[in-house]
Image 1 (cartoon, one colour):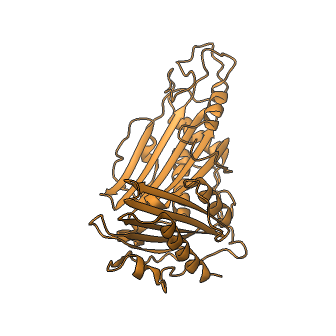
Image 2: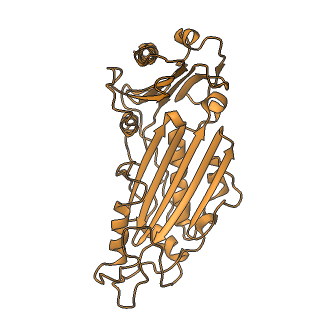
Image 3: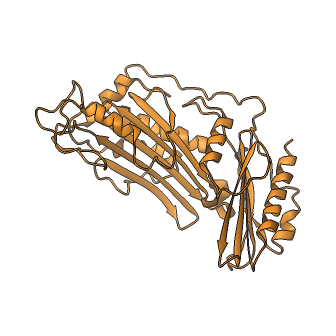
Length: 370
């Protein structure tokens, strides 16, 4: 649901108090501005009141983080989390910075400083430039990440209103072998993060006229809206991980499916199969295929030659003690669906043989979809 630029500006204005200092995040001068510095009309001057209370309990529950007091609430940052050992980890972070005109360049306004910082946000180097998002402040962008070998999903939204930059990051890591049914779709994280941003910008000064919700775009022709039970009918697991019980409850979400075989003894083989289909984005208008393509290309792998599978594929490998233990990983895109296969075994396993097995599993799954 887009917000009016004026509303976001008014909300931040209500949250800012006059002061003469700002926080440096590296790389450029942000010393306290002098009275002769190039302030522009309506620029924000000073620290921010604690915006942690702006995010509603409903939004926090939607992101499955604890709706109690945030872990860290030092102005202007806050963080909520929900951690259960290595099985479930969810985090929501909010960071608001207000920039001043640099003393060394009096003609360089605080807004221009914030615009520069917005283009060079720390931590975005490995994520890419992001996709522009309309309806939030003067400029906004989003970046998504999915690292299947870490079971990690990330949504990061950044918004600039004049000389203020707000970032909201939502992360989720869930053990697929124990809690697959608790995995939130990436689209759900994206939508809830957008609501958190909207609340942070409008809680103190709601829009003059409520904006109607934005409907999600339809799936493009041929895109996957139901992954199906990707592990059903596979014969390879019985041979590759003999005697190991299959783990992972299926979810009620038709956009995700998969299974895992592993034991805690550390020296028996392990196999994970994970399929995710991606919905079109109401924030950016990107198709599910465009989102899946960006996610796959962000997962670079190790540069090994990729097999000709699906629309595109990438591989990754790990090796321990000169081959005593090996891991073969394969990520394949079929339209808007990503299929991940991770096979690990000990006792001087053959890299070539393991790659052949992961490719065979991917072919069997994709063969059921064509």
